[in-house]
Image (cartoon, rainbow, N blue to C red; front, side, top):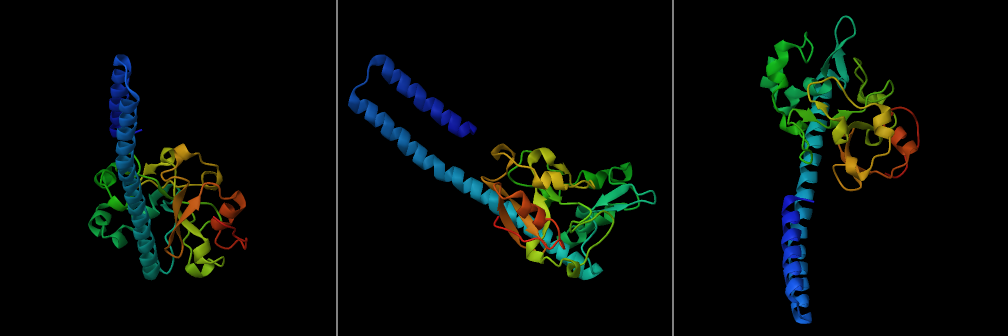
Length: 252
């Protein structure tokens, strides 16, 4: 419950208690109930409007990420790898870093030393920079954290250090997830080469883990953003994270 609603309920409860102590008539009691109903009716649309606005902003963030992904594909002929690696195979930089030039973040991208790891002191300034499109408006995290994670498995659309072309997505771009809106406790620094695995994508999620009532938003390979219910069957989710698995995708 928000501070505003807590204050509202506290005030009304105090008023009711005061009336009860001095003895209230039926008319007074009905008046109090009427005032409570009116205040709740006035307050609830504000709450719904705020939630709707945040969900719209979250959808717009994912759309911007999707557009950047496709612009990257236009330039390089493939989607970015999930992360780059050094000569020893150590992860260096996330796909989120690689798409910065296509998100009007070219100046930030130019500050990053791609030959050194994301958490190297040479990249400290960039690491501390907030990228608005990576900030989910429904979270209470540090603004350099993000819940927009790619689903990364050996068979996913984004793979470690290996790009994938749209032509390889034989299940259809509208049936293949690129990026998920992860639970808040799975958030990562936006520059980190860390993402979601199959377990995170497929595991059941309680309402407390969700940013939106009943499910979460996902970016698909065609650039669309779709809401997926938390009740979606595991088999359907598994089919959505493989670009060439040949699975039949059910309702979500």
